[in-house]
Amino acid sequence: MTHPISERTTVRRYSHRAAYDRATIDAILDEGVVCHVGLLTDQGYPLVIPLAYGRQGDVIYLHGSAASRLFRGARTPGREICVCVTLVDGLVVARSVYNTDINYRSVVLIGEATEVTDLNEKRQCLDALVDCIIPGRTADARGPTVKELKATMLLRLPIREASAKIRRGWPEDNEEDYELPIWAGVTPIRTLFEPPRPDPRLTEGHCVPWYLTPYTRPGTTR
Amino acid sequence: MTHPISERTTVRRYSHRAAYDRATIDAILDEGVVCHVGLLTDQGYPLVIPLAYGRQGDVIYLHGSAASRLFRGARTPGREICVCVTLVDGLVVARSVYNTDINYRSVVLIGEATEVTDLNEKRQCLDALVDCIIPGRTADARGPTVKELKATMLLRLPIREASAKIRRGWPEDNEEDYELPIWAGVTPIRTLFEPPRPDPRLTEGHCVPWYLTPYTRPGTTR
Image (cartoon, rainbow over all chains, first blue to last red; front, side):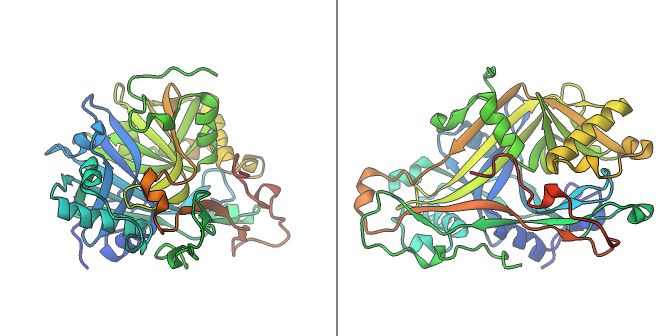
């Protein structure tokens, strides 16, 4: 899928690490669980908050409390937000301090978020979001009541201006440093989802759902 | 250690999850590897980028390329940045879609970053930063040359306005939902640092350094 490259999402530093194709961008978005949202506050400084999110097609859903000042600020027309998803894959242990690095895959999205207000649409979007975090869960869990839907603020951010940046592989040492008697390599980092632990208040006779045994993210079989 | 609570870093949503003591804040900052930095761009929108960082005492160090437009923008006097560190600890599988949640620990810092320009100070700060990411590494790795120091932009952000937010424990379901025949619990999430892999260009006879066998973050023995 082609994807327009905007001036703002063009990666300038280490541009050989940039990717703009939707398959790469979507794979990173789908593997992540938490994003970091940058919002411009009324006071003029940027605030960054961690949020759960979910991608469905060309859209990212973000949800928060309807009473949240931040969320109200984020949907202000003309005020753009930035969403960043980062997967940390390893420590790059180079021969020099200068070339010490981190392997990662990240996506940056910029755009104007709009609020989902129709209750039926909100229900669908909220289900999509929960199924992004725990695929299969909404078939089992109690669905939201109208009161709960009204207490939820749901934002929709189109994936229009986006770029990915990826650093993978071995240290990139200066050529003369390869002769130094210094160990170098990579310590891989993985996100481990442990076996589920039952709620102490769980009544007897419930099986652990299939989507938790084991729980996996799309793409984590790398 | 007491820590002033500013208007801007006061947690308003789920305020029972907030913490303002430096021990809690420092523990989260020290366990994290990557932070998300929010910067106000010249064009007036906020940009969020992932960066390596290190804490030393009351200061966070951030480093990037001296040629980076973003970094040059971040040190603009009067222009504040926001740094967020998030540790994701688990999926909270509640009985209802509405109460589905994520266990996490996060810190938000706001402040004006200043550039470290003195080369000796820069060398010390860069060492501190690398030793935060890989404790012990600077004793082995080749130190930075003057040229490398000049090519590095190092920013110092004081830990003055900061707050932590923590969600831990079991689902918090509505009282009437506990009777529903729905499994509930927590899927714990852990960051796994795998055994180090040697650089294919490594010459023979080098031992894997002690700080990588195993590599641990402060606080990860929980």
